[in-house]
Image (cartoon, rainbow, N blue to C red; front, side, top):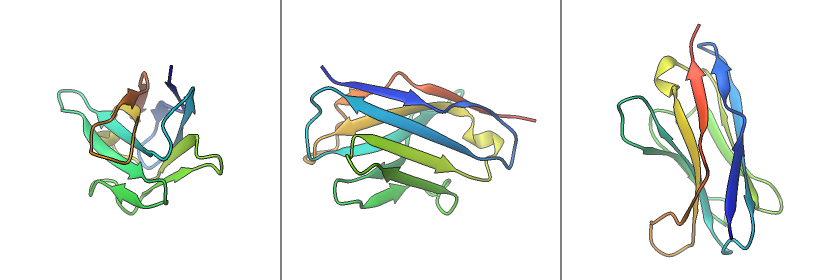
Length: 118
């Protein structure tokens, strides 16, 4: 059984920074792609950033240039660092993981709330 365990959410002031972590526990498929999604109030879930087994990254335009996704050396933990946060970044952030074939994410974390407010 695979579990994705997230941490690092909370209340952040506009212009602030945060770092989210997601650790995969159990027999997750390798190689894999890990990603961060978010769902804001009244919005659909969107892909924020992803990182492949080879380190290739993707960022949605709204976070590009102020966010970094990375993995630890064991490739079982993925991080998302976001800077210069604004109220539009307020959302529940979810970690996802999938195999290398296709685009369907097989595993999901429980979500962590990020609120940007003064």
